[in-house]
Amino acid sequence: MIYKSSSQWRAATNKRVLLFAMSGLGKTYLSNTLRETGDWFHYSIDYRIGTRYLGEQIADNAKREAMKNPFLRELLRSNSIYIGSNISFDDLKPVSSYLGKPGEASKGGLPWDEYTRRQDQFQAAEVAALHDTGHFMDRASTLYGYPHFICDTGGSICEWVDADDPNDPILTDLASKTLMVWIEGTEAHTKELIRRFDKEPKPMSYDPVFLVATWEAYLAEFNVAPDKVDPDDFVRWAFAKALAHRQPRYKAMADRWGLTLPMERVSRVRDAAGFVDMIAEALEARG
Image (cartoon, rainbow, N blue to C red; front, side, top):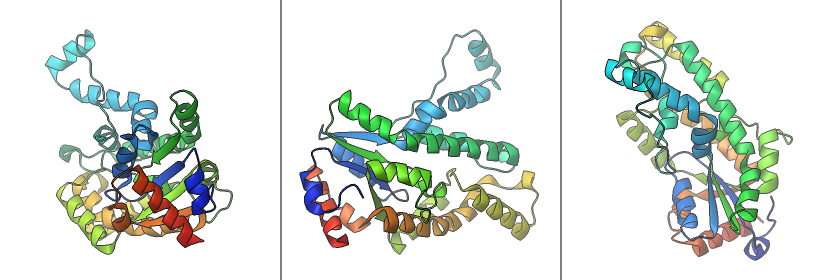
């Protein structure tokens, strides 16, 4: 870790932290809290994906839908209207909507080949955005004059790394530049995530091996053809399995490459001083 002790962390004039966790555990809350002080640069991986690496694809997907409407089609073809993504730190729906869900077209599903093509695109985009962390760290300091840096990662970071590999290209890059911090949820939080997801199932990105195995298991269990799958039913069914799949990966990342913070401790942070104290306590406890 780039900070070996709580005293080294407190004394650092340039504090650099990367947060990873499941959704709803406080990554963006902490990042927003720090950014609002004016001393911390907030780098959002999902925002970078949506604006730099998948921005054109997201906009084209919206245009493709608009072209199905004769009125909008003529306006687009004459360049009379503009369709773009209004993505923000607090609203990343354009990214998830582009990922989509596999299954029956009449229910909004994508053909399996198109769905997995977009999954591959997202993986490449997220890996690239993660490797851009150092670039934005330099920009934050040299261009904008921010002394401190916080990286807010997407929940799927654990899908693209091997925490047991000391030479993992993503983790070695990130750990050499930032203090990697996992926000650990509770069993109650996991149940709440599943409950919320059941009400509003959203697209997710998965490790290809896990995704194929989960898809094949779903088709076999429900004896359904790929083009007849209810998209929402599949992503609901896969969600709890995805959480169980990710939890040990997050833990291995934290155990070998960084720190673990319980969500209860994170929820008590109200300002930058509280954040600094929290990290210092975690470093001291790790020893």
